[in-house]
Image (cartoon, rainbow, N blue to C red; front, side):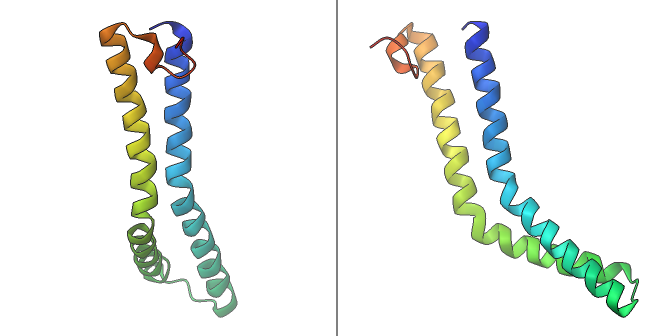
Length: 100
């Protein structure tokens, strides 16, 4: 494995991390903004008002997004395993963009 392949693996890992975490982060952002707006309008500054609904909505969203997240992580793991096999056998045809 050379430096370019290592950089490609790290870039792919970062991209998968962003893709997998982005839906939950966006949901948390929207829920936080809605709760903050509600608190500003009603002048209620209770900490549990921000914490409990956000946790419940995030848990619910995670349940629905788990198949999406699992698919991306499974695909990434399979790509990494294929690279490990290609390095172990010395076969460049298994690598993306390899000779073959």
